[in-house]
Image 1 (cartoon, rainbow, N blue to C red):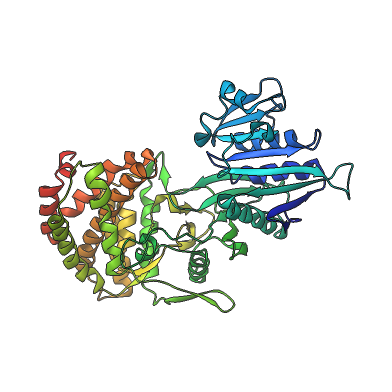
Image 2: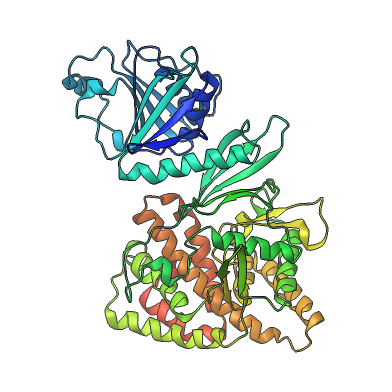
Length: 514
């Protein structure tokens, strides 16, 4: 998309040949999601079917997919790894009423829809999710060239801008011929693609546009601001460079567009810390020792992002800790435990946590990577020392108690960590800390570990319930029994006797599954 200019509210993209049209199709496929409608217009032979086929092949992850234009069937359905895709050719439709007979407009919210000759549909294709693409002959290259005009409503403007910026970043970094493969979108607004050159070299495109503010819920602030979630890609860039300066294997940043929230970063590979879904003890211990090494440093609280641009690492303060625990009251209690809690009971919950937070906030703070667990740890056997452990997904890092990240590891939200391995990690961490600081108090650290482990699992129980109920992602519920077990494990520490009593009285379901 590097040739685009913005005219009359549309992105105009010069396509030199069929290969450029196909590349546009692949780029568009990267940003499509269920509910999107791609309306393809243009004269016969303008390239509508070619563009639709390129989109379909990318969504289906099948470069050999035939995908003929459904001129006679009118609508063809495809099941792809990214969901169902409908490809319609309305050339033979004479009235919009005919769409009722072919079922095109029944499930538009649940599928990606590609429509050639969309004018035949009249007003039946809703404008809100519609991307209009008009293909025409390029007068400068009439034999092979085309010009694509892309325009959409409010929901499309930022997505198109990101797509255009991504293509420009990829091209300027020398990866213009690379194949783009959608990897995943995580539980936040970020998405990732793997780029593969003909040589086999790979890189990761991180798509992380500025986070839009949600509704204000307290003191005029949205949840993301109170919990100190990263609002831009600056936080990742700053922490990445900070970690790399200490010799850790955060991915090298190959190219960046900070304004668009795009990074092209080193691909650390797929080597993990699990074997058939179970923790590899030696690799988990290596992760614990990396944390011990990190925590022995005196670390800066402000990190550079670019010339004249810095990132201030927020504190993991009382407000952030509190609002995270309250997720269990808002989402887990009513939707999982089936309990409606009165205000006085919620207030008691808050008072108990407030006293516990007094303890953890009194300790010296350090970089808290916040999601230090198996999905974000990559094993790099060809490297040495702490560099054998690749680190990703640290953009939400805060300044907090050092016990938090070890609790994230020892009570991995995605993997069952046996209690014996958890104790091994605590012992390894404590021994490494004592080796560099004789005053290190393992008993006090273990107390903070139990408190923050309970805080983290309380938060995650609420988040997984919210992902199911609010966001329509029930797959996260399969992890809840593990989270509940970790929480019970933490509540056995004497420091949490009062909190355990509250849970037993008001959320007894937590103990029914024990």
